[in-house]
Image 1 (cartoon, rainbow, N blue to C red):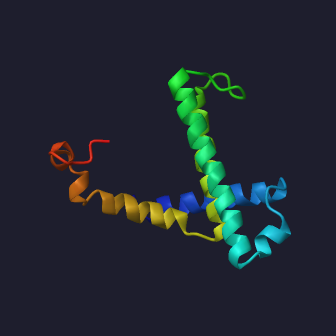
Image 2 (cartoon, rainbow, N blue to C red):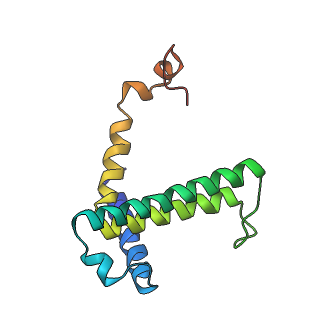
Amino acid sequence: MGTNDADNINKLKSEVFHANCKAGWWTDQDILCKGKVRATLIASKLCLVHSEVSEALEGMRKGLMDDHLPHREMFEVELADTIIRILDLAGFAGLDLGGAIVEKFNYNKTRADHKIENRNAVGGKTI
């Protein structure tokens, strides 16, 4: 992964955030908030990310198709919703999410605990 990937992710992040602002998911008051109010707002948005992951798990467990996109599995659609929520939150927070994803992905390729022989070893990361 490289710079173009980071740029594409950040473009998508901006598009999602601006569309959600236009749709009323963020208010001017939200955008101007500071300190503890901002932390509380971010925490509540992280709870929405968690709820999408939980819905993906439920869809996977039950083998359900999605209600809104019935040609797709609920698992797939809820993972998409999770990513959309994360992109939205990163847009609000002004994060370079694309850059962070590329850097973290490339770093993880070098990690000893991500090598198969170490994951399969006693005490390794098997899940």
